[in-house]
Image 1: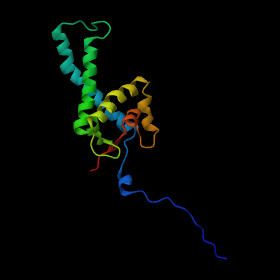
Image 2 (image 1 turned 90 degrees about the horizontal axis):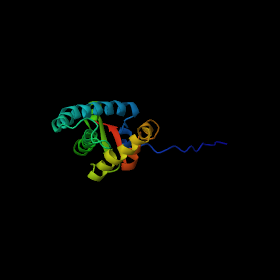
Image 3 (image 1 turned 60 degrees about the vertical axis):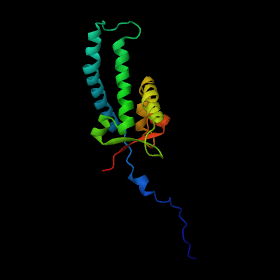
Image 4 (image 1 turned 180 degrees about the horizontal axis):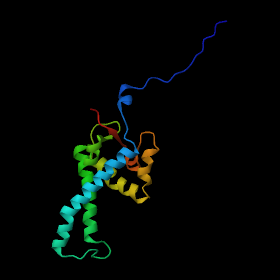
Length: 157
């Protein structure tokens, strides 16, 4: 008796799916480190001289120091504006990474503000677990990516 085995194989992945290279934890970490250096430089150029010009002592007013508030504004403005208009920050540019909305082209203001503002704040607040998740999720998503339904991928050349 001639028996043939009926082996079920998974359908081949689409060409679009195979072309996507998700950016992993370390690549995103180095890009973020570059961005932190850029933001620190912007703060040194813009905020520190401004606060000194106002002649406000460091750490004043006590509860929410002006320099801390302005530094936070520069931090979030940098990430929100760069991601909205260029889909990448300078760090991501350096490493060839880009932020995309899953399933649709372009990033809306709502998506970017949610990802870079609220999502990044939450990811940083809970002991960086939101960032560490990138190393363990299927599409290398951080908590802020999951919230905003975004991915970070390597740019096609």
